[in-house]
Each structure stands twice: as C-alpha cells, then as structure tokens.
Length: 123
Image 1 (cartoon, rainbow, N blue to C red):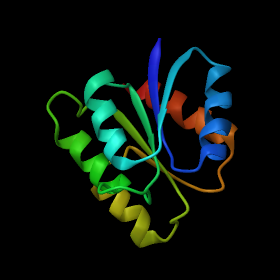
Image 2 (image 1 turned 45 degrees about the vertical axis):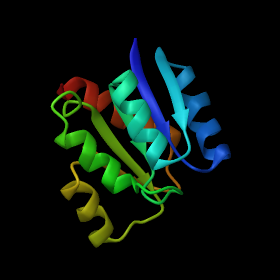
Image 3 (image 1 turned 90 degrees about the vertical axis):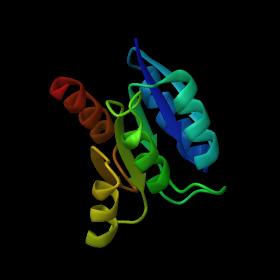
Image 4 (image 1 turned 180 degrees about the vertical axis):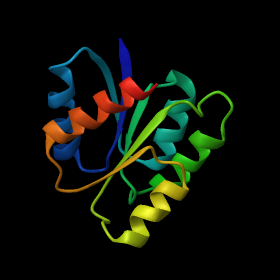
C-alpha cells in the first residue's frame, strides 16, 4: 500500500485531499507544518509527499522538498507541490527544489489523482 503524506496548514484542504485519496488504496498521513513534515517524512518514509509551499513553522515547503531530495534515504520520494503560488518564478523555484510536480490551488482532485498515478507509472 502506497504511503502518502499530506502537508497542508488548512484543515479543510487536508480533509478534502484525505477523502479523495482514501477512495484509492493509499495509507494517508497528514501534518500541518513544514517542521512536522520533515520529522514525519524521516520516520515513515512515504512514497509521495503532497506539500504546500507556505506554512507556519521554521521550514517552508520548498525547504522540506530540498531536504527530502538531498536525503539518501528519501530522494526517491515523489514530491508534489500543492500551492496558491502560481507564477512562473514560483513554479521554477519548486522544480529547482526538486519537486516532481507542481499543482496550483485551486486544483481538481481528479487531476491530483492523475498526477499521483502518472508518477507511479514513471517509477
């Protein structure tokens, strides 16, 4: 069963994503800050991290993404940025940090599932 970590500071968005993913065969965990994201990612080693950029705490989503991709144990973890920051510069910053995909809010939950499935096929 694929492990997916949702990293989002808005509880209603976490709930929407969780409900969407639970229709598939995913083990879903969720956290609200970048600091929690890094801690939990190291502990559970998820297959996919759905990562907001702007969050409370000391680590942004971009920093967490970079930490994941720089880690020998986690570099194969797929990271999908889910953010309201949609400019070309923001997208490039996400890709430079190592994100595998970059989706701008509001996003379609069906699109999110398509992206996850697409990343699964590319592994």
